[in-house]
Image (cartoon, helix red, strand yellow):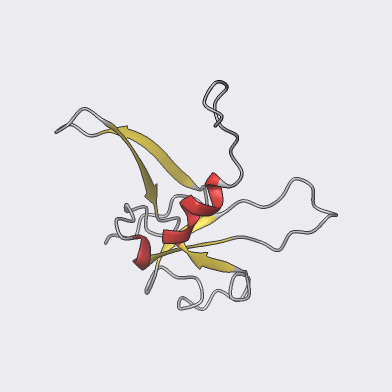
Length: 104
Protein backbone atom coordinates (compact mmCIF):
# COMPACT_ATOMS: atom_id res chain seq x y z
CA UNK A 1 0.00 0.00 0.00
CA UNK A 2 1.32 3.42 -0.91
CA UNK A 3 0.99 6.36 1.44
CA UNK A 4 -1.60 8.56 -0.26
CA UNK A 5 -3.52 10.49 2.33
CA UNK A 6 -7.03 11.42 1.33
CA UNK A 7 -6.67 14.66 3.28
CA UNK A 8 -8.88 13.42 6.11
CA UNK A 9 -11.94 13.11 3.89
CA UNK A 10 -14.12 10.09 4.40
CA UNK A 11 -14.11 8.20 1.15
CA UNK A 12 -17.07 5.96 0.42
CA UNK A 13 -17.71 5.73 -3.30
CA UNK A 14 -20.06 3.99 -5.65
CA UNK A 15 -18.21 2.69 -8.70
CA UNK A 16 -19.16 0.57 -11.66
CA UNK A 17 -17.45 -2.82 -11.81
CA UNK A 18 -16.12 -3.02 -15.38
CA UNK A 19 -16.43 -6.82 -15.46
CA UNK A 20 -20.10 -6.96 -14.52
CA UNK A 21 -21.25 -3.34 -15.11
CA UNK A 22 -22.88 -3.49 -11.67
CA UNK A 23 -22.56 -0.68 -9.15
CA UNK A 24 -20.58 -1.45 -6.01
CA UNK A 25 -19.81 0.54 -2.88
CA UNK A 26 -16.15 0.81 -1.94
CA UNK A 27 -14.44 2.28 1.12
CA UNK A 28 -11.01 3.92 0.90
CA UNK A 29 -8.58 4.29 3.80
CA UNK A 30 -8.33 7.86 5.13
CA UNK A 31 -4.60 7.36 5.70
CA UNK A 32 -3.24 5.65 2.57
CA UNK A 33 -6.13 6.13 0.11
CA UNK A 34 -6.22 2.46 -0.90
CA UNK A 35 -9.47 0.47 -1.01
CA UNK A 36 -10.32 -1.55 2.10
CA UNK A 37 -11.38 -4.92 0.71
CA UNK A 38 -11.68 -6.99 3.91
CA UNK A 39 -14.18 -5.72 6.49
CA UNK A 40 -12.40 -7.65 9.24
CA UNK A 41 -9.14 -5.86 8.45
CA UNK A 42 -10.64 -2.38 8.39
CA UNK A 43 -11.95 -0.08 11.09
CA UNK A 44 -13.78 3.19 11.39
CA UNK A 45 -13.44 5.82 14.09
CA UNK A 46 -15.25 9.02 15.06
CA UNK A 47 -15.09 11.78 17.66
CA UNK A 48 -17.24 11.45 20.76
CA UNK A 49 -20.74 12.85 20.28
CA UNK A 50 -23.48 13.80 22.73
CA UNK A 51 -26.71 15.79 22.86
CA UNK A 52 -24.67 19.02 22.68
CA UNK A 53 -23.24 18.06 19.28
CA UNK A 54 -26.35 17.68 17.09
CA UNK A 55 -24.29 17.72 13.90
CA UNK A 56 -22.69 14.45 15.00
CA UNK A 57 -19.21 13.43 13.91
CA UNK A 58 -17.55 12.37 10.68
CA UNK A 59 -16.46 8.75 10.47
CA UNK A 60 -12.92 8.03 9.27
CA UNK A 61 -11.93 4.69 7.77
CA UNK A 62 -8.56 2.91 8.12
CA UNK A 63 -6.85 -0.38 7.40
CA UNK A 64 -5.97 -2.18 10.62
CA UNK A 65 -2.24 -2.23 11.25
CA UNK A 66 0.05 0.43 9.86
CA UNK A 67 -2.78 2.80 8.86
CA UNK A 68 -4.52 2.55 12.26
CA UNK A 69 -4.15 5.89 14.12
CA UNK A 70 -3.41 4.11 17.42
CA UNK A 71 -0.51 2.20 15.86
CA UNK A 72 0.78 5.34 14.17
CA UNK A 73 0.96 7.09 17.55
CA UNK A 74 -1.58 9.82 16.79
CA UNK A 75 -2.36 11.13 20.30
CA UNK A 76 -5.32 13.16 19.02
CA UNK A 77 -6.97 10.01 17.65
CA UNK A 78 -5.74 7.35 20.09
CA UNK A 79 -8.74 7.48 22.41
CA UNK A 80 -11.41 7.96 19.76
CA UNK A 81 -14.15 5.34 19.73
CA UNK A 82 -13.78 2.78 16.94
CA UNK A 83 -15.51 -0.26 15.50
CA UNK A 84 -14.63 -2.97 13.01
CA UNK A 85 -15.58 -2.00 9.45
CA UNK A 86 -17.48 -5.29 8.95
CA UNK A 87 -20.14 -3.97 11.39
CA UNK A 88 -20.65 -0.63 9.62
CA UNK A 89 -23.33 -1.78 7.12
CA UNK A 90 -25.47 -3.21 9.93
CA UNK A 91 -25.34 0.00 11.95
CA UNK A 92 -25.93 2.11 8.85
CA UNK A 93 -28.99 0.08 7.83
CA UNK A 94 -30.62 0.77 11.21
CA UNK A 95 -30.69 4.48 10.33
CA UNK A 96 -32.13 4.29 6.82
CA UNK A 97 -35.87 4.29 6.23
CA UNK A 98 -37.21 1.96 3.55
CA UNK A 99 -38.02 3.46 0.17
CA UNK A 100 -41.67 4.51 -0.12
CA UNK A 101 -43.69 1.53 -1.22
CA UNK A 102 -41.11 -0.98 0.06
CA UNK A 103 -42.44 -1.12 3.64
CA UNK A 104 -43.45 -4.55 4.84
